[in-house]
Length: 363
Image (tube, rainbow, N blue to C red):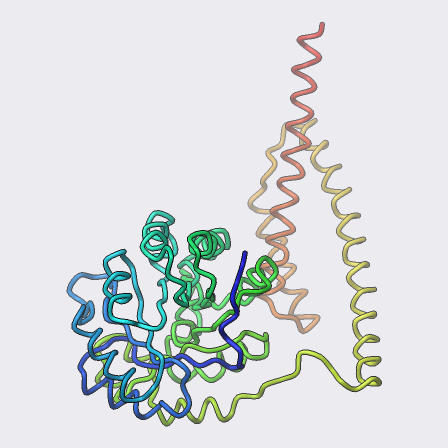
């Protein structure tokens, strides 16, 4: 992908309310954060889950954003979901656009938006899809790039989960890391407001994003969050925004000190040795799994044994406690190991059956 890097500072800050509610609300919030924010954000079209929820003020909100642009000098950004939204924003001179998670999931919608943007190199941010499907995130960025959008960035806003958790959306920090592996030139902005879902933990999420070397933050900020018409719980005041930004610890990506680098290299070498041992142990485990597959084949036993799987989980969680490890992490690791054990057994049984069929045909 050909990318024009338009983000040259860290952290790049996009801030403003979830929704544009009134001209007064936008202006008061914008003037309060103009000294710290790089971009002022506000949604004017709000795709909500239920039709009776506040769905945004619509087109008239564009003029309110234009007034902020003129009075504060801030760049302005809003979410677009249709080609009509694109046309209205481009005609009004909106500086930046973003595509929401509900839109990213649908390649048809993204393609329609991309076609509407053809020939206009406006900065466009793409939020991750609701579920952790990296291909959809990559695909949306690629579709925009193919029509000439070079000023592209990704927004990590977390992923829907059925499990009860501290976060509104599971951060799954491995996903932006995987995106960066695929597209190292793409700036990645974290949206701690949608990850947290709670103003009390936005600072924690913001710090984690910086520790993972993401490029910036999109934080929902409202001059009176309690009265917000949408997502009131996850919005913060301008004063809180200043406090969070001032307290952020920005760490180096590399050590300058020669002796500290040597020490870090020693730690990493120890990790490499242990990692190799883990791979070796997994190889030995796989050999036993192959023996089990042949045993089950000969004795006509099903591959998946539910009781055994529950037993593995129970014992491994107990091991996690004994070794002072995170139970959830150990469970996830063994879920992956078990998945590939099942696949290994399935492959062996399938191949064995195929050979038997072939032998019968050749008789």
